[in-house]
Amino acid sequence: METKKTSLYQLHQDCNAKFVEFAGYQMPIQYSEGILEEHKFTRNHSGIFDVSHMGQLFIFGGDELIKDLEKIFPLDLKNLKINHSKYSFLMDKGAGIQDDLIITKINEGFLIILNAACKVNDFKILKGLLNEKYKMVLDENRSLIAIQGPKSSQILNEFVDGVKNLNFMSGNWFMFENQKVYITRSGYTGEDGFEISIPNEFAYKLTRELINRGSKLVGLGARDTLRLEAGLCLYGNDLDKDKTPVEANLKWAISKERITKGDFIGSDIIIKQLNNGVTKIRVGIKPEGKVIAREKTKIFNQLDIHIGEITSGTFGPSVNGPVAMGYVENKFSKKNTKVFLEVRGKKYPASVCSLPFYKKSYVKGAV
Amino acid sequence: MSEVKYSKEHEWIKLEGDVATIGITKHATEMLGDIVFAELPEKGSSVEKDGTAGVVESTKAASDVYTPVSGEVVDTNQEIVDDPSKINQDPENNAWFFRLKIKDKSEMDSLMNKEDYDKFAKESNS
Image (tube, rainbow over all chains, first blue to last red; front, side, top):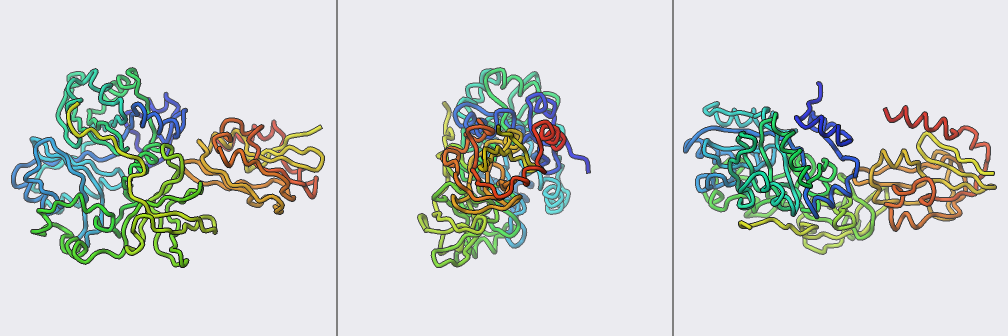
């Protein structure tokens, strides 16, 4: 199968991107300055991320659609305000996570942002679950550009007036070059920022505007170090079908109101796990030394018994040391529990820690 | 007179008397990206030609460092362990990895000279 290119492919090339194949797309892993600089620039200034490989699924409908989606997602969608977003997941009957996503209520229905590697399958699953009752568009004609970091609001607001007034996890339609663009105040780096859904033909122009105003392109490499420092999950690593939202320590994203009724896919298991606890759970892991423990690294307790596995691990540029997360047996999940990580045949000390590694600076209200 | 030679695993080796200084090439650092971790062999240990003698990690992945010749480790460069970014800054001079008292000078014969290595690196890049 031929790999796909996003509408910014030429721009990435012009900016000396190194490409990597990701979920069937040629995506920039880094540019000439490298992952460390790109990471720090995002934390201190403003980074642009081409995330056009992610799925933008529009589902059109009214009250009936809300009811039908509540049978799928553990969210209180009927009380969600127009233009507000929630983090959620698509689960199977056993509450296994098939994808994690952001769902936003819009006037015409819902916009759901899906992981690139899952989007086609998600579309099929949702179409089946909704019995083809609603118009659904997995929109390939729109790009998705994220701008993240403390200067992002000022930069974007210079030419898209009003975006600075958006609250975190909410969005709206704005105009750019006479085009309707949907902008949400959100992101996946632990920084304040925006995600811009824009017709493909205008993605280049918008990105150029951002660059001209001081923002810089940042690749998937830094996106990974940023999200891990922020304690955010990567589907395929930290989340998959063998893990439930309760095990993934994401129960905060499940609506309390919906749990009492329990009428969504996977609710039996979720309620059971919330009442009885889980055997494994996702935690932050901080290695004591400099050794990096990557995915699939085995975790041992002080008696040298295998108690879990790392699911994501790298060097955290803002933490200036190794960071990781993984799943351990629940009884070893308490903060500061001493553990050992087996890297290249040797065991290195580490401890269970709370997430994030890097403190968020999301804007809660209007500035 | 010292000559620098190069391995297919992208190490450079400089022989002075019977002591060889070994590091990784600029080309290797460009492929790896920002190096954030380095592990070196223990002083006094013995390493065998083409065997693993260390590890470097970028933010993306871990890679083994091989030794192009056999010998006893007589010195290691702690500076690159303390600040691995030095490897990206000056890979073929100050950011050497380890020094070996070599056993068999003829092991150098199969290694590449600068011109051959540059050609090899260019080809392996495409």
